[in-house]
Every structure is written in C-alpha cells, then in structure tokens.
Image (cartoon, rainbow over all chains, first blue to last red):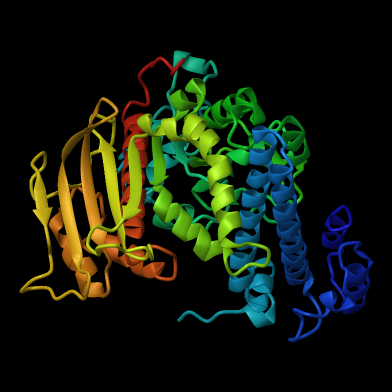
Length: 127
Length: 407
C-alpha cells in the first residue's frame, strides 16, 4: 500500500500518468486493473481507479483469512488465537462490504464535481 | 432567540441576522464594547468567566456503541442528515480514514484508538473487542480535548491493511460522535458523553444480517459465518454487551413475533428503550405518557399488507433504571402508513409535522427504511438535535454570569 499515497500527489492527472501509476503498484496483479473503471472521458479518474483496485485485494484477504482461521482453530491453537483469527475475518468482511457500498454509489462525474465545482461540466442552473 | 441589540437608529442599524443557528456564534454573547471571542477555560479580561457552548466552546459529544467495527454505517448517515448536509471522509487525507465530517458533525471511529494492530492482536491472541487492544487513556485525552475546543492529531486505524497509519488532524466540531465498540467502556469517557446510544442486535438477527452480507462473497460459507460469530461471542458478552446498561437509549432489534417460525429475518421487531430522567431528553411516547399501550394501526382507516404493524409502549425497568419502551413490530409498505404512525407519536422533537416521514423517505434506499430500525434511528437523530439545541440555548442564556466549568 506504500505506493498508493503517491497517486494522490499529481494535481493534474493525465491518462499516461494514470496508466503507468496503476501498473507500477505491487498490488495490481492484473494489468487490466487500471483500465477497468474508465470508460468515459479519459482524464481525471484518479480516485475511482484507486477505489476499484482495493476491493479485489480485500476479497483475496478475506478468502485467505478464512482459510487461516480454519487452520488455526482446527490445528489446536489456543482459544484466544482462534478468536483473534475469526475476528480478523469479521473485520475484513466488514471492510469489504463497506468498500462495495462505496463503489456502488460512486459516479465518476459526481466525484470530479465535488473537487472541481467551478468547471464547465459541473455548473448547475438552479433558477 | 433574537439577540440583536437595539442601540442603533433604524437608518444605521446593522443587518440583524435571525437565522436558526445564529445563537451559536460567539458574537451573540457579548453586549460590551470589548469585542473578543471567548475560549472556554481561559482567564478573561474584565473579570468575566464565560461558559461557552456551540461552535468554539464545549462540543456536544454523542457516543454510539455497535458491534463489528465502524464505517459508513446507516445510523451515522441518518444522524448527520438530520443535522443537514452529507458526512464525508476528510478531503485530501488518508483515503482509508474512518472519520466522517459534515458542516456540524464529525464522526470518529473508535477503532482508531487500537493500541495493537492486526498483527499485534494475532500475536497476543486477543480480539479487537478486548480492552487490552485499545488505548483508553488516549481516547479519553483526545475526546476531552475536542470537547474543550482544541484540535487533536488522532491516529488512523486502516481496516484494509490492519495497520495504524499516520495521524490526522481533527478540529473541534459542534457535535462530535464517537462510534465503535467501546464508547461507554471507560468511566472517564462515559462522563464526557452528553448522550449515548447502544445498538443491541439479537443473535438470530445478527446471524441473518451477516449471511446477507457475506454469503455472496467468495470464501464464506454458512459454517464460516457461524464460526466467526461464535468465536467472537465470549469477548462480546464480556466487554461490549455490558455497556448497554449505561446507554441513555438502546435500540434493540429482535426477530418478529408477527410471523410464526420466521427465519428469514426480514421483518423485525425493534424496541426503543429510553432512560427516564436524562437531562435534555424527553422520551417519545404513544397516546399517554407513562401508561401501557398496545396499538395496531391497521384497520378501517389504514390498510396494511401482511404481516402488518404492531406498536406497544409502556414503562419498564432496565438494569435497575426506569425506562420507557416504544416497540414496533412489522414493516411499512407505503408512505401513508408511515405518516399515520408519525401523527400518533408524541414528543418526537420534530420541527414540523411529517419530518420523520420526510427523513425516512430521503433515505429510502438505506437498509431498515421500512421498519423500526430506520424509524427509531431517525427519531433518535431528532432527539439528539433537540438535545444539542437545548444545550446551546442553556449556554447562550447565561453568558455573562461567572460559572464553574465542568471539572
């Protein structure tokens, strides 16, 4: 996750920077990851790209943690260790479901307009 | 409260803003020529000791205890919506921050006060529910500081990586909500709370909700969900559950009694248990305060579909406290059922007729919008707003008296 904060530094996100940034992250196991959420106008899609990536890795973490918890509890670990392992499963499942909710609700245009309300695309006419 | 001075002639009169929240600004409190903004706890010139409230004074602190960590939970969204504005994570900060900020409210997740990160807890064999995994001293210090009007650097617990990230700056808001597993566990933190709520979900309902949440995900099976609940149960019963005796309001969610042998968990029986004698909090009641009522609104004036709606209200004792319990079993199918029910409830602290219905409709996509969970969460939100306004009014009505600050 160390490289992810660096993605927020460039103030003018460019498609080239986005593509190279996404593929250089160690967690992007598949190169299609960077292209997935971006169907509409190419630039300024930093945030959705980051959000889309995380649920993938959380899902794998959830699967792994369940396997681990089952091993620890079956393999005669202490009850404290077993409880801690299942607690981790619970924490990761909750994080996954919150990430899902966030992803479901996010509209790329709304996200952009929240940060840049003065641009032409985001002007609203209320009268 | 109109607090404009009348020293000026009409022609030269400065615009006098009588909006709803004007009394929260410090300028309102002063009629003397020395124009200074008060900060609570500091010595003042002219020998005035001022007890402040609202924006730059004492922040109103609400505690919410609920299982399974924090996040953009439905209750928080309803609550912040009652105050106006949407609560969002701090812009430009850590994307995995658990904090939510709106114009009036800041919501802090108490998982940020974990003293052990995920690896640390695994090594020691403790769950996040265990008090040993949490730094209550830091929690108390920071909540106290925010309450007194000072900004703090609060740590961030990243739920994805399981690590403690760099701290983020939290500025004191008008209302601070601390949400998590242990808001009422530590006595000192408990004493800082102006109001506290506990969400008590029964085991069957918890199981049904976790199945709905997790079964579609890879890796989970019925057994793993069951095992996860069972493994956490001892710590939950020992450390989290006892907090409900300290709560001013408990929202208890149980399986319905209207459908025999129901195991889907879609229809819920929800009880709002309200402590009597809490300052600035008047419990909601049905028809006649203090009596025992059983009410089925469906009948000639209102047609409901199966299984209908049933309300009960009455006084009771809960962990040796006097309480009033308002209970709803069933679900709303239509708007007119909701408004009909609202028109028969009293002491809702709504600003206009139909406000509860309006809030429920605003968030009809939230879970629980058609049953007692959404209804009671919305009502508690209105009660908190009422409590906040009363606290602010108290502070503003005694601005020039020397008062003792809360030690």
